[in-house]
Amino acid sequence: MKKVLLGGVAAGVAALGIGAAVPAQAATSQSVRTESGKVRCYINVNDIDHGGGPLVVCQTSAPGSTGFAQGPMSGTPGFHYNLAVVRGTGAFNWDDGNIPGTPQAEAQDILLNYGQTYHINGWTILPSVDGARFTNDTTGHGMFVSIQDVYSF
Image 1 (cartoon, rainbow, N blue to C red):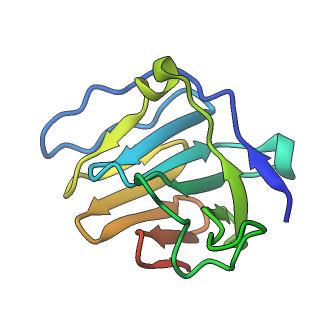
Image 2 (cartoon, helix red, strand yellow):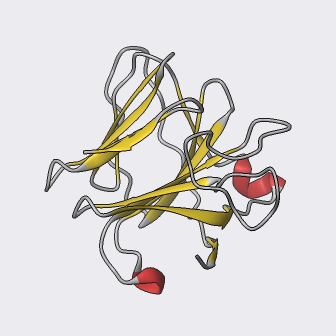
């Protein structure tokens, strides 16, 4: 597997209303993180750098993380792949890499509050204490992501 470095996360955070759905973003990419802070994801409308089409990639970001527990072992002994990647087509893969972010870029992350529905770049996100579900609005494909469990649908 190749190392994936995803950059160019666009700025722009929607105002979050309690209990209200967050409107779609005008930017073509947006980074988000779970309320627990253990998973950070990058949502792209059209990932032209990696084959095109809508894409969500999530990375474990918990301190001391050794990757997603159910992911294959990476090239580093004792570590699993730390990226779960799903395309709008439903194609899923594991990868090893980094969603980079300067403190300024990470400050633009949308915090996914449990129980709130988000609509970002053609994806509907349903975060909960159990994990986050990303569904492509056009195809209905996506993935569920948590530290303990990752699966595509």
